[in-house]
Length: 612
View 1 (cartoon, rainbow, N blue to C red):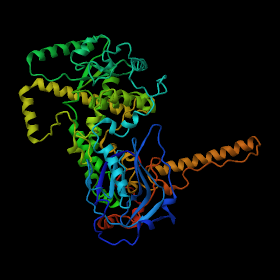
View 2: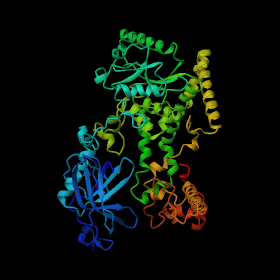
View 3: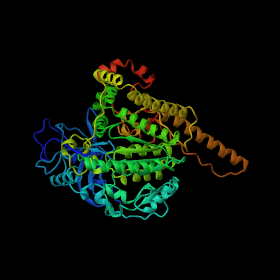
View 4: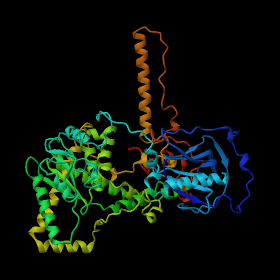
């Protein structure tokens, strides 16, 4: 459990005057009629993982509306994770001041309640009211030290642990994740994609002596002189990403720095002209340039949309869930996150169409070629290369395009708290690079466009027609592929129509029991299929037994899904661990749904979790 943020509420360890009188003393809290102290749970550590601090007598809450039930145990912080050790349930009724604030820096007053928001969208609430004061100070300070106030890499979770982890040398890239940190790895990837006839791996940046943003080794077109890489510190160089079976390739390029001096601009222009001539002449195909910095999404748009979208799933209790559920679709629409997903998929399909159908090279252009280039390039390879859809292939893809591709994880995720003002709202850090926001079309903009078309005549109409032709080619390619049977070992294109872009329920809703369909969705079909398979297997074994006249004891096939009441629409990624004691729909909303029996017969009207 990796802590994303720590939120505290209430007073310090010495509680203020309570708003009510509790008749249960801490030492009288029992779990299943046994003393909690009698049960100890062992902490399992990875090789090299170190225990930093821990606190006992901690209650982890399971949120309900009427009362708060919890698990009683130890809260542990290591250099790898935050863990809670305890597996029994205890009942406790308490009132807390629900003011929430983010904890950071040196605290004068330590909280009696912690709310931890994890990176995988889980929310944990802990009560420290009965924990010793010194243990509260140590555990809170330890968590803050690794999550809210690290200024050095060695203070972060995983980074501090990574120094103790052993590095294993991989000899066979076919069966292991390719790290792309050697020239041999890139040569192997070139050979796998049959790109070694037109492209070469270079070591001009070995030891990062040219540019720290570029990988130590990378691939460029064969005719390109290596000294060109050093001229502008890797900017303006077409870097190879992947080659298609028909010889077309996906390239990326970081834009040259913007200069005001006419002399430098002329030098840059002549340099780029030489580069483009190199990649346009045979044996290279026609090159299409996709400028992601000006003609696509801005990083600001993506950040803002995801921040809004993420807040829909950081649910503290069932009441909060039902409050947002009533306006779920409007909140989801206002975040614009699903529209951003659709636009990214559409752009990747357009590039796939150019490479697959038109046999064109595609050059992705971006300011540093380390944000949207990583995203679009990864999507294209997932659609076109079945190897990237395997576990090892996908891990190698992330290593190649994101890690070695120079994505600024520290800046984008604000791990070192360089952008604290934005992070304190439980959001990712805002991008540090300046990007243009996409223009919003309106009445006056449309009128201006109409005027420009009339004034410029044929010149502007030529651009419009080429854009329409591109859209027609894309639609024809897209519809043609979806009209044929799917080959899962070949090209795969996702659906991008509005209703087809859905919330990834198994990621975002798996920790919210109220959002799951009990025994519903595709899990019901899967359950029946497995039961039928088990029955067929059992009958087949009986036939074989009679055929061979063997009297060996019949091993009954284990039924995986006998207890269907424990299953939900997120199976097998989530099982319902608890059920709400009451349907905590607001009264007005509950009455509007009609009779309870009628409700049980209805199809789900709110979130379709079945087609995930």
